[in-house]
Image 1 (cartoon, helix red, strand yellow):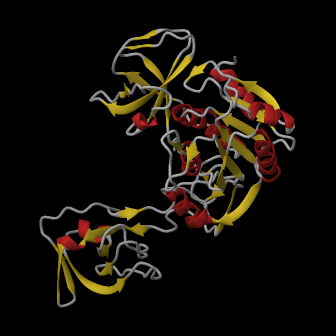
Image 2 (image 1 turned 120 degrees about the vertical axis):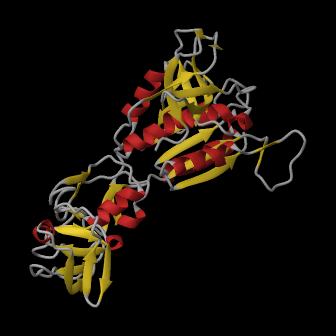
Length: 401
């Protein structure tokens, strides 16, 4: 069996590179950026007023002037006016600083009567106060966003501020998620005592969409070799990525590996030294499509999807790898099998700023209800058996922002 690191590396080495597409910037949320975004102008592009109030010459204030005839009013978006000595201009937040002005006095510290603005006698002004200096955030041409970043709402604001109505991002791969098993029944359909509800497929689709991979479809196939061969073959013709759940263990009805071989899918590995998710299977289709066959037990399927499928799709999209995270166990854990343990956990923090992982032990790998409220899972090394409280371990969040 491969180790988890070897399995990850084998998958990444086999992944294609998704195409680049140009889309409206407001549709780019969650997509992986494929271009640099440069500042269109200095930011701010002018000396920007930060408070409602009056604009004055500090030299006038410094010489003792407290009463200023109001010369005019200037709102945000108005052309900058020229301030006369000894006078003031009523100014609004966001306006450009009037020529000759170098001090803003907040409206709360002035009284206006008969066209005269009088500053409170106890007010102490400073030169260039409440002025956001031109180019103090960044200068024109500065790279603000780099390729490989997942686009956030804040990034959309940056893209818009740079004058870009469209942006280049990684294309969405078409992903087909296939649930296999005679026993599976969709929600809303009548169910027999010996059957179970179909949960893996919807959960995998939801996880992929949460990570920005929106072009996902779900199919359910019963355990019939001929039907599996026909339907999976059709999906291989149409999809960029295939993710199957179930049918990859050692049972008599676990037909998936044999069917994939018959369809020309080259196996890269079958089984990984981990729990849950040991039967994990990965291969490459005739057109170079990555094919993931995940175990059918729900906890195993979700862990394998998060551990292998999500990072692989992100890598193919060109996303920059995120920095690894770690968490400290809050209790002793003993795990005897010589396997990497992916242990679900709830995250809390202490007053020292430590990220703490509270282990959540599932009853079996089918106990997916125990995952409710967990934030992810910690990775416990296969070389160890005992992990005392205070042990620091790699952390994998269900949703990697």
